[in-house]
Length: 278
Image 1 (tube, rainbow, N blue to C red):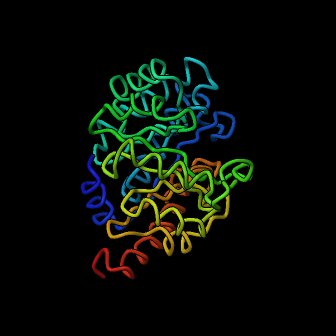
Image 2: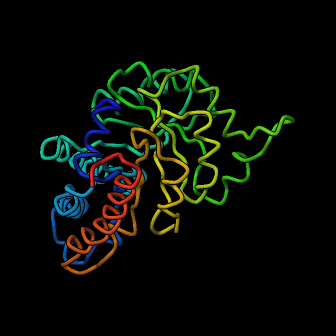
C-alpha cells in the first residue's frame, strides 16, 4: 500500500485509527477458552466488529510468542484472515526487530516474504546495516522507533548532545539518508504529543504511528494539533481500551463502540482541517 493509497483509505473511512491486537489469552472472555484457537477466535470477532472503523491493525508479536508455537499460529491466522477478508486494511507487525545485517535479512524474509505484512516496527539503534535489509522490500514499510510513549524514553531518547539536539532527533535526521517518506514511518508516542512539533520539523511528510491514546491517556487532539500534515500523516493506535472494553459475550460490540468514539473524533479533526468534506 502506497502513502497515497493509505491517505485515500483514511478519507474514505474518515478515520486514522489503528487497532492494536495485543491479545492476551488470560484476558479474553472465558467463554472463548473452549474454542480450538481462542486467540484467533477473539481476534476474528474484534476484526469483524471494527474493520469499518479503522484503517490498520497492529498485532503485537510478543503477545503471540508468549504462547509458543500455538500463539505464532494464531498470529499467522490473524494476518491471513485480514488479508483475505479485509484486504484494504494496513497490517503492521509490531515486532520491534533490529539486528546485524544477516539477521535482519532473515527477519525481513519472515515478515515481508512469508507473512507479507505491510509494515514492521524496527529499533534503529544498531544503525543503517540493521535497517537496510528491510528497506530492500519495495511495497513494504519500515516503522522506526523514534520517540516512544513509555516513561523509560527519557533514559536515552531525550538526552541531548552539546548542540541541544535530542537523540530521537538525531535518529530522525540520520534515517533520512536510508529512505524517504514513501517507505519510512516513525513511532512517536501520544504521551509525548508536544514533541511532535520537533518531529515534524525533521520529517514533515512522513506517516507517524502514534501509540498511547486510550489506556495511556494520550490526547488525540494534541496529537492532531502537532502531528497532522497534508495527507493526514497519522496512524493513531489504541489497543487495550478497545479490545478489552468488555469481558462478556458482548465484548466485540463493546470494542466497536469504543472504536467508534475515536473514529468520530477523528472524523471531526479531518473535517476541521479540510482533509475530508463535511
